Length: 455
Ligand code: PLP
Image 1 (cartoon, helix red, strand yellow):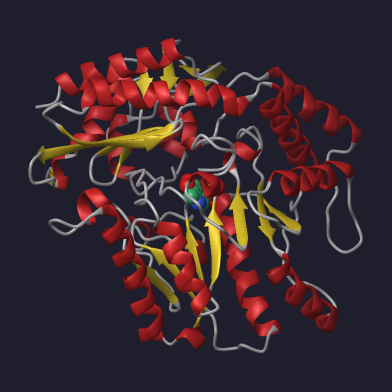
Image 2: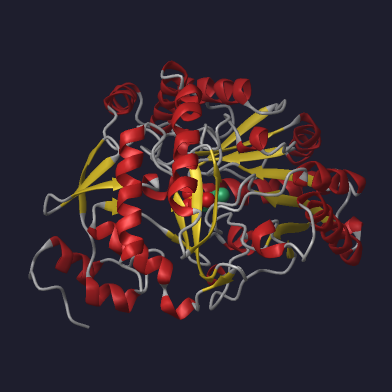
């Protein structure tokens, strides 16, 4: 391993000390990190002063960019008033109460209670445990299997990684755990049969789900978890009519639907929730990321009456709900989330996304649909991807070993645009919701130049 040149630089210290998440550790030791030291609107600066537009808002999360003073002040105010208190048993505090009320008032379907955790993974883990608890409360002790979808992403804890449908989250970790199943990816571009319409494809996805439930035995299947739009798996937009067809199957077999809104929530897809954009009718909804604009870690699980009722009865029988994190509903994180939701309202965030989102989508299509390396441009609101292919007519991807997506993202970074390659050589677009049209132009100029450098 060759350490980066500048001895005692932050880069060298990073290589010596940090075990990075989601990183090839050997390549990282050779190449060193990009040390980000400041934020300014949709831009971040590295320790050498180079400025980048971040077109994925960090990890699809910094919805208000990287220098929002109101959020800093909300955190400071709350730290001074009450830096910590927990929510176990009878204890409560105002930021958590206010945030719960705000989430329930904004929910896409009627929800009755909100549980807090610290990350998307923990929210999904909590939701899985709630589903199990719910079925035990109903005396349905066999009904425990959880279905995810191939290419779905739900996090990296033992249960949420098992639910995730991406190979790198399973390989060498001995996952998925038993009891986690995966159904097909609803991606028309790659998944449709010759001559199949979108409606027929959506019906086939629902039929596949039904076959899986029947093969396992409906009395053993508890819930399906689904992102309204799959994010990390490739920004995969389901075909029209997909979720109503899926929901009809789930209802037939008394299987709950959990919407993972960790990326899609809070305006990303053009409506407040991805569930509204994609006609999802969830029993449980998990969210995180833009909930606090990523300024502090916080996530939430909303449950409807159908789910909360039996759970509440069971907690009364057992004397407690034996689940909760020290930092569930942390007052400083909750205060920042409350302020974040107020800012979304005050800036008319949905109107802004309604203006810049279609601009980003149409510019992506105008510039890239006919590009020889681009197979598909897809997205809605302020979430999109372009997929790079070797054979446009056959929809054939490049050999994974050529790392075409990762190399394009690296070229973009050199040009001052932080991008992200997705599985199958997709390039993700999920900028801070405050991005302007001219900043979008700047990003897309960078993408064009980066693609020109790909051979
Ligand atoms: N669910 C979805 C849809 C996500 O995109 C992510 C993270 O990207 C998660 C869950 C996991 O969230 P976290 O990384 O906060 O645990």
